[in-house]
Image 1 (cartoon, rainbow, N blue to C red):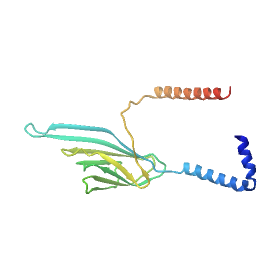
Image 2 (image 1 turned 90 degrees about the vertical axis):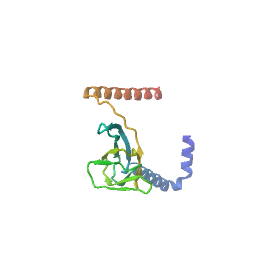
Image 3 (image 1 turned 30 degrees about the horizontal axis):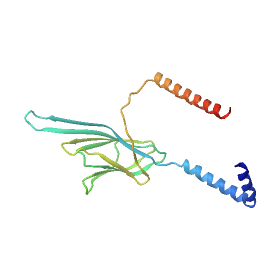
Image 4 (image 1 turned 45 degrees about the vertical axis):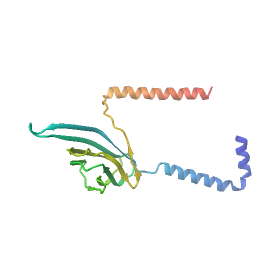
Length: 188
């Protein structure tokens, strides 16, 4: 294989300077494109609660549902005109951190919340409460800069510093052992 490549390079000797410059330019462009700051949006829900109870003993029961939604820009560039589309209008919602936004009902019964921008690494939390209506779901997140990705959130126990240090040590030891094994295989 090496002989074929060196033979081909000798045949292209008159064009070597041009080809070297072209290869270097393409390689530089690829590296710059790979490390260019991008917008990357993720969204999901961690908790959904549904309660049904009577306010008065002789009254009708009411249904209350709550949901906490998250939208995060995990990229390195700000996201502009981020639109959250809900399946229906909730009774009430709040955005955390409080910010300027536009809300409107769409012709198909869906509900839109337009947030002007999300900074890099910024987390937007939407708390919703819905009383005796359809339980609104976050259908999607639209942004002209990227395609948002839905991620699953799970409640997870938080461990202390000692346990985190032990886990880090074991992961590091596993990485070193794997590298040692790979090097031992290739350099016998």
